Image (cartoon, rainbow, N blue to C red; front, side):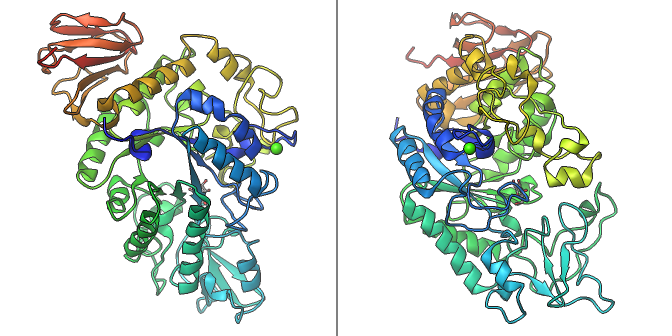
Length: 537
Ligand code: GLC
Ligand code: CA
């Protein structure tokens, strides 16, 4: 096997630091907490951590409003703790990916504070200021993603500034060469520290049209924001050269990686930004992050993604993050996690870098909050229509103690009461647990080059509500069969050209050689992985 390339062959684990592990009893997870769980992560078998923001932030959007790009928020620790995390992670072969939120700053960022003082401020043009329309209204029809106009009036200086998110997150003016330079310096700062990569928060919205024209209207769409065609407030042509520049900078360092969060992503939009001289990867995956439990839908999404990225970039797959309903809840998983195992097997055996989200490995569920418990401002704004993102951000469930072993103090966000049964400690001791399933599969992935690097080929025939596909390299060929259904399904091995194969992994069957079986009966929600016999076997 030629050399292992971490971002292609490995698995990336997202940590939402506030909720991972608290070491100083203030109810907020911290960097020392992550440090003390590195062995857990190494043992799980992941290769990199994507850290959600740990920079100083007034937390209007829980870290996604940054007031200093080159420091660590004291609640998470100090820079020396971060340096130690980097050192200790690297010692265990775990890489660190930083989340960079460069579309906007916090309103508390010194640049914005200065920009507010006068139209002549040195930093005024770091942001997007426009005069009111003739009737005193906002300069155009652009809306904020989280509700209402995207323009906020600043009476003292008589102009509006633009914000894609909350008004406390003013968008930066990327057309200003000074902003451009400052931000590239931010990349350099973290690269020089030795971080291994970046996740770019809503990167495709950095540039807006220079003349601020109205966005054309659409007839349909759930929210007003969906009823605009966003052709002027995102996806501007200036983005591609900028990405090339970022990638060129990364190429000056060995094995660095950049993955983008495409704003309002379709597969096409996300793929547009990936390539050898562009981003290594971009997130899209509506079916994976937002869809329901339907094998057919997943297959369609996989084929589309494979096709769009062919000869361009290495795919990536993700079922959870800090913005969407947890997959266990979304997929209506049963208490013993049979569906979660099928989902995990799909994520870990497709051709592409898998991203996990803390707690996914123990099947953490979305937690429900009542109206006055909601902390996420998006949830407070849209309630009851949309209840926000707190439900997927609850503290990691380490054990069955009162605060789930996350902290000895009251956590910033309530722990899910199901931690009494569902926690790392209990699952570590149960050989059939989801946690041990993840461990086993992550190990299997590492042992088989075809599972990491093989081509993807959908089987020519699949029973309804199953996924059956091959992963092949010159060295080995694997067949993966996943039953999304509770009913048994017959896989016609002869028909799909998989006559000689050994079962090497299964949730239901004994593994072993299968002597030219023509068919294989998948049990309900079974995961079965076969290795095809080669001619010399
Ligand atoms: C991204 C983040 C989300 C945040 C938003 C604004 O979508 O994932 O959590 O609210 O950007 O920064
Ligand atoms: Ca803490």
